[in-house]
Structures are given as C-alpha cells and as structure tokens.
Image (cartoon, rainbow, N blue to C red):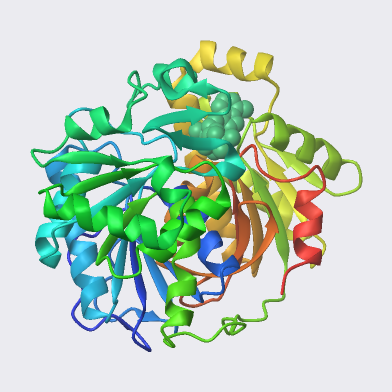
Length: 435
Ligand code: ADP
C-alpha cells in the first residue's frame, strides 16, 4: 500500500479530536482502535497520513496507521512526524505512539528514535514506554518483558526475521536506541496507585530522565498508569497501555461516556476472502464450506499464468447475494510447503495476495458491500487494492477483531482478521452481529 508521508492541508476530521495516535503497523493500529472503541472513544483509523481533501468522520480518537516498524529509523521518524503534524492540525490534545506488545525493534530503532523525534516536535521532555498486554499474556516486571511464562528473549521472538528480541530488559533495549536517560518505574510504585506513579514521574523528570519504562502485570495496573499519564503530551506503548487514557478525557469533562459512533448501515452482496493458512482460519474455512458456496484459489494455476482472479469472479457472478460466498487459498501446511517448494515462498505469497486484491476489486465492482478478510498480509493487499484510505471502527466481533467501515464511496463493511483470530464460526457469525 502506498504510504503518504505529507499531511494534507484540508483533510480534517469534522470535530477536534482528543487522542491522536501513530501506529507503526496496520494490524497493530486496528488492535489499538478496538481497545479505544471498547473504552468508549469513537475511533477512526487512517491508512497512512491522509491526503488533502479526505473527509474524516467525527471521532474522539484518530489513529494514523503507518508501516514503519522495520523501515530505516530515519524513514520511520519522517513518517511519524508527518502523522503528528496532521494530528496536531486536527486538534489532538494528547498523542500516543503505538508499537508491538513484544517491543519489536533493533538497536537502531525504531521505538527510541521515533519517541525522541515526537517529544522534540511536541516540545515535551518526558514520556513512558509500556508494551504490556496482560490479556495476551505480555507483562513487564522489573523492566523485563514476559511473553506468557517466558522471558521475551526465550520466546519465539528471539528468532523473528526482522526484529529478533534477544534481550528481555526493556530499559537496556531502549537505552541502546536513545542518547537520553532511561529508567524504570517499578512495580512497587504502581502498586500504590496513580498518585504514587505521578510522583515517581516527577522524581525522574527532575533527575534528568526522559524515558520511563513501566512495569505492569494486570489490567488494573494499566488503568492506574493511564490515569497517571493524564498530563503527558506523549504516551507510548502497546494497545494495553491505551486502556486507561479514555477515562482521563471523561474525568476532564472533554468526552461523554456511552456515545457511540454514527456507523453506516451497510447491506448488499457479501463475501469472505481467506488468504491465511493459520490454524484458526483453516478451521473457519472448513466450517463455512460445509453449507456455503466456496471457490478455491490455486497458487500453482496462478504460477502457470492462468487468470485465476477472472475465473473466481466468473464463478462468483451468479452467486452473489446477502448470503456470503467464500473464496479462499487457505491450505494445510503440507500443501503450502509443496507450493512453496515448487514456486518459492515469496512468489507464492505475492501471487496469492495480488489475486486476492484483484478478486476483492472485482467483487466490489459487482456490487459486494460486506466482506470478511482473513489474514494480516491478505487484508493489507485487499485494502490496498480497494484504495481504502481509512476505516471507522465498529463493535468487536471476536476478541481483537472489530467491524470496520471504509471511508469514502462506496461504503464497505469490512472485518479484517489476523489469521489466528476468531472462533470457528467467525465467517458467518460476523454478519449476524454486523451493526
Ligand atoms: P496470517 O494472518 O495467518 O499470517 P497472512 O495473510 O498474513 O495470514 O499471510 C498468509 C500468506 O500466505 C500470504 O502471503 C498469502 O498470500 C500466502 N498464501 C495463502 N495461501 C497460500 C497457499 N495456498 N500457498 C502458499 N502461500 C499461500
């Protein structure tokens, strides 16, 4: 998807926003959006810094989703500052920098350099860092990040292809990414509540510390920390750390509770596109195939030069209705390995993603207005092919997966699901709970 890095002068939300967020990847942004909606904020997610003239629906929080996690630090800083500028112009009072709950980064960045650049641009001197997400078993104790029962450095993250995490100490990891002083606000402070944490921040600030890593083990800790961060211009963290922020706006009289976003009612032909081969998606495909029409996309046919997207669209043509059809490339591990051995892992991925994008485009041209898409990369490819520039976030379908509504015409209802998310009947149940 094309990333725009310059703010458009006349793209503005219809009202002033409270929380302006910058996320370093697409699915992470959706995770944050879902958290904010559950905490009562009307939330819009923009895919890249918006172009001039884009009309953005009324919202309490706007998240600019970048793809900056693994770029060179300079590029990530440039993109993040572009997002910040737009959010500042949109009136945001507080800013949030969202990264992964496993603190995905290297000694070159990008968490430290981006946070430093944002602080400088905001004229602020202090911020916090906290990737904890207890619901997903990411916790921080004495500055050490745990993934489930394992230290970060003993978890699968040590083998990550782009950002291998081999040091579990967030203070050390971050200190290597910034010339400024990093310290810990330990569990002992946060166990005493928000006031004690605020005092700890004050003490650190006075001793010249710019970056505080925060311990947290439970959601209650995150709520207390959120309260303690009410006056910080910039907060950084995973999606968990954002949980406690919306209540600050309510306490300050800036936001009413129980107000939900005006979401469009979308009806029309319906489809499910599954490009994930994860275990949960395999189960979902198997379940849906039992009593719905389904079409399998064959990567080897694509590699042989057949126009598989056109074949799928011809098949779909007479079958489109409110009852969802399924178009999938989902396959069992042996089948995927065989395809990869014959045409290469990357080429297989690219061919399937491109085909999914063309199928999505063709379906929308043929009137489809409601779609579930399974797979992180697949969702990126679909949204890119459809030219969707932003999403208004609706209610959660299953943990971590909300309904979203594309900004612009025609209005599309989209549920973009990371491969392993959702219960076995997700593909059909999603449409039953669509607002
Ligand atoms: P997940 O969220 O489960 O990781 P993704 O969509 O991010 O799902 O990634 C799945 C990748 O596998 C995509 O690049 C997709 O194009 C590719 N893929 C899908 N089906 C097949 C298949 N049958 N054979 C080989 N690769 C496939």
